[in-house]
Length: 141
Image (tube, rainbow, N blue to C red; front, side, top):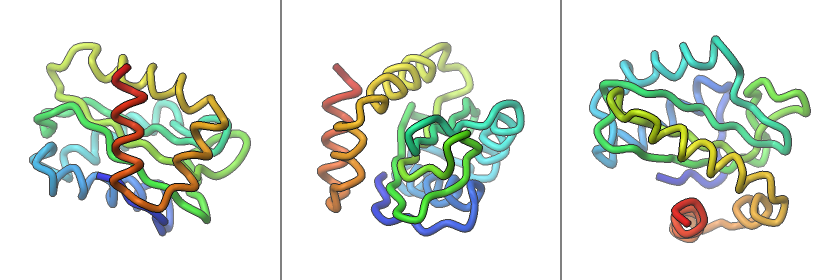
């Protein structure tokens, strides 16, 4: 569920491409239902954060397994961060009845990506499997 070199026209396009990976992996059952939940969340508060990071997320009945899909982008995508476009995008999907599970993932991920070396490690990696393994190792600590 990793896209290296994402090319997206805007945040909706980037989110859709990542959500398609979640659907293909069997973690989201209905892409449109899930994307509506993500869009509603984005309306309340943009998910772009300092350092070229975006962490769009939502709870939805269409999510079967809590998951994170990630993309790197050389051109960046505007997710509303004050410092500009996001080059590292994490899409968090959580079941509607998942309680605070997605907030724990969000908190851990947000903390970890503040480390510039970690961000650069992900951004410079070209192998999706290595990115996935790195995230799993670092976020599940």
